[in-house]
Every structure is written in structure tokens, then in C-alpha cells.
Length: 478
Image (tube, rainbow, N blue to C red; front, side):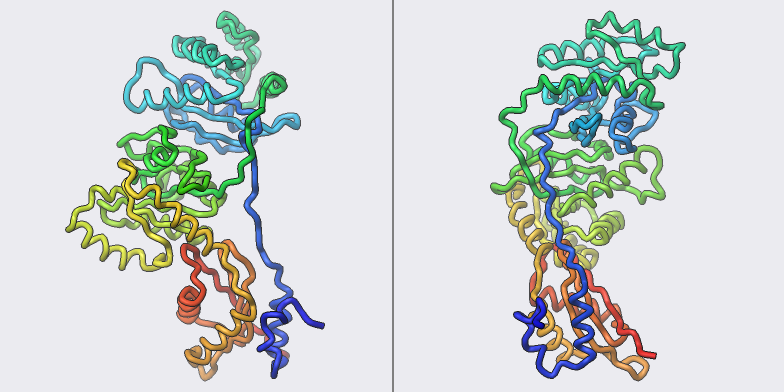
């Protein structure tokens, strides 16, 4: 009976040995791992913004609502800085929860930008949950947020946080004077009263008008790099607005921040991540959780834009992040940022550093940009499409085995211990990233596998994508 490979591998049928036939049968039994890009529609779900002063427990409440420790929490103000969205569900209702930085009045610099992001979140949301520290009571900043919400004509639900027991219920009752109706006494840390608060939130959903919201299913792109290499600046330039807080202070971004942007006529979902300056086992406090969130954002992405500061020497940390991208199997585009700061001397040394330090990712497209000025930013689309195409490339089984046969005939595996392992059959078991399984008569050395990978790239492309080569060694008959 003909099998699924017969139409493109007839050349193998003639004079096929039992050994090769067995390898072919084993290859056909492999389940192919194609997976699709999940289309989701955040715009068609209610958006609930969590607003409040610094350190009143907003991110703790977000974690309580989504049921996992996703938002970065630390016992000091100012850890959350951007608008960060998470999917949530309560009583069968799906919605998007938006965590924000602490809102303050009459501030400057970084604090002012954080406050502006919180104010923008209130205008974009369908419902605002104002979190107030019941132990401290309402402040001028709280009253200012209320005025902003009223101007935006958004329903506001008051959450009186840090009411850990019955003795502090009276602190929550004192917040009736804000004129927002019932203050819901909660303890975000322990979960006390959070159910009543969420019941009040979902009760407002029926008043939301979803007309005009469209469904989107864009490719997901993660922005990665060391702190202060310009990831947030690049996102802002592509978004055409100050979507994320940018400051010269390294480590301004803590939580992953996503935004729909259009690049060269195509819409992508870009995720700005925290700059990784240490390994997760060396980091502490909010840095530790920022590293974990960055890795999680990368695993959800399809392609990574790895930003490197062209004006500085390529560092060990750059290498470590690149290794993490390759390990997760994501497509890769190298973005050499701050190109406007590179002079002739630096360019000479940079080319040498790229040849030496980035040799293991020489297959990745590379583009020189200046995020602040916008130079070459619009050309990122070409590189992204090339990387995604390489990531999704599939080689027909017959063509692959013809290639392997010619390769082995011209360059056989070295003899080791008087034995020479042979490649009996090969198949591509999956894409995203391209994964090949070689059925062999013995162990194939790592150097020869790298040789096969290099020749696969020369023959079939795979630009911008890592390649995985696995072995299935024939078991010896007893």
C-alpha cells in the first residue's frame, strides 16, 4: 500500500534494504508538530483598569484576579511603570485586566511618565477599579484620579484594600465620602472580599458597547536585550506614541508590555520586556520576577527582536540572551540599535565582534537602526517576514533524503573505533522551529550534526530560524 511519502520519494523505493525500510516506517509513525497561531480578540473583551497611588496593592490585586503571580510585586513603590494587560475570567466572563503604575500628582521625570500612563489607561478602559489603601484613607492623588475618570465618563468601582479583618472594616466605611458609592473592603494579599468586588465589576459589563471593535490575530514579536539598549524607545517609535515609559535609568521596564503596531503594512503584536542584566538565579527582588516574565513572554512569542547596543562592546549578557532565544526555538532578528552613535572606528571593531561573538547566530537577519530617530525602523518588516518564513519552512521527505544521500556520499561521517555510523533515513518532524529526525545506525557526532545543519541552510534557507536535529539510533538485534 502506498504511504504518504511515496509521491515525493519514489527514488528511494528501488533497492530499498530492510534496514532503510524499517527506518522509513519509524519515520512515518512520527506525529508532525504543526501548530497554528492562536487568534484572539482582546478588543472584544471588556477592559478593566486597576488605578491607584503607588504601593496600594494594585499588582497584588491583579495577581489575585488572574489567579497566578504574573504581575511583578515588591514591597516598595514604583515597581510597576507601564500599562500591562492580562487575560482574566470571573463567573464565566472573560475580560482584560490592565495593571498600571502608581498615579501621583505634581511629580516630574520618571514618576510623571508613570502617572501619564496610568491616566491613559483610565481613558482606554471600559471600567476603572480605583484601589485605595483603607488604612491610610483617601488622598489628593485619589481624588485627582476620580476627576480624571469622571471626565472620561467611565464607571469607577472603589476597592478599599488592606482590610485584613473585621477590625479594619470601619476604615473602608470612611471612604463613602468619596462619592463613588459602596467601597468594597478587600484584602488583595489574602483574597478577602475579592469575590464581591469582581461581582460588581462583571455587573457593569452589560453596559459596555462593543460596536466597532474588530478581531485581530497578529504575529507575536518579543523585544529582548540588556537594560537600556532601546527596547521601549523602539516600541514607542513603531507605535507612534509614548506607549511605554522611557528613561535613561536602566531597568525602567519591569513587566512585559504588549502593543499592536503596523510595520511595513503588516500588523504585529510587539511585547516589550524587561532588560535582563543577570541570570535569574543571581537576580533578587523585582529583577528576579522580571527575568521570569521575560522568559514567559519569549515562549509565547513567535519571533524575537534581539536589540544590541551598537555603540558598546557586545557583552556576555548579550550572548546569554541569544542562547535563551535559541533554546526556546524562536525565530530571531538581530537589531543593532543606536547606529547613529557609531563612528567609523567603532564600526570597524563592531564588525570584528559580530564575526567572533555572533557566529553561532549568523543565520539571523541583521538590521542597523536608530530607535530614537526612526532610522531604518520601517525596514524591520522585511526581516520579520524572512525570519517567520524560515521558521515555518518544511522540506519534502523525498527531497530531504535525496539531499542527505548526496551529502553523505560526498562527505561521509568519520570512522570512529573502526565503525562508521550511517544515516538510514531522515524526516522533518515539525516546524516552528524546523526539527529534523535522522534514523541512524550509530551515534552521529555533534560536529557532523553541525555540518549537516550548515548544509541544510545552504540548500533550503531557514533564514532567521534555529534548526533542531535529533537522532534515532537503530537498536541492535539480540
